[in-house]
Image (cartoon, rainbow, N blue to C red; front, side):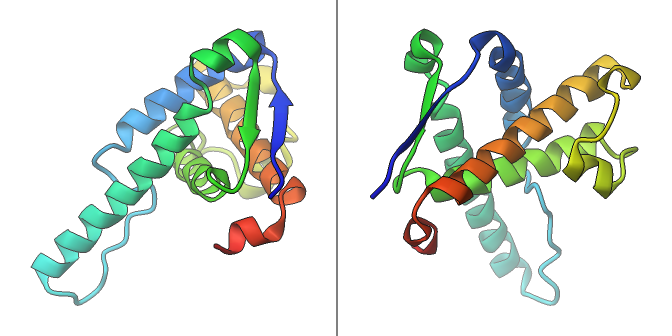
Length: 153
């Protein structure tokens, strides 16, 4: 299986990691994409929700592990068969949370294209937007550079 390693600018990425950690903390007991789960029995619904939150938290742990002490020294993150899928899911969860909390005023086209004057945003939204784009780039890198069999499970 393929492994992709990317060297990132610590100066640019460290502030974004703080935003990721804050969003991750806010997701510890909450789903990024809540679902009422319809007419399911309350006990089953709660158990299912707990499983989904647990899986989301595990994926976020994998994402945050990319930015450990080794990253602080080298600026390098690596993606492979072991972390590709959880990192994709965690990026999606954090992006949803950032969108919900800081980027509601931006339409879908702006969010996905990144076509925006960053200076027009207030500080919290600016950091969230930069983090949103950073996480989208991570997702794109994984999808473009890793063997599709990694993502198929």
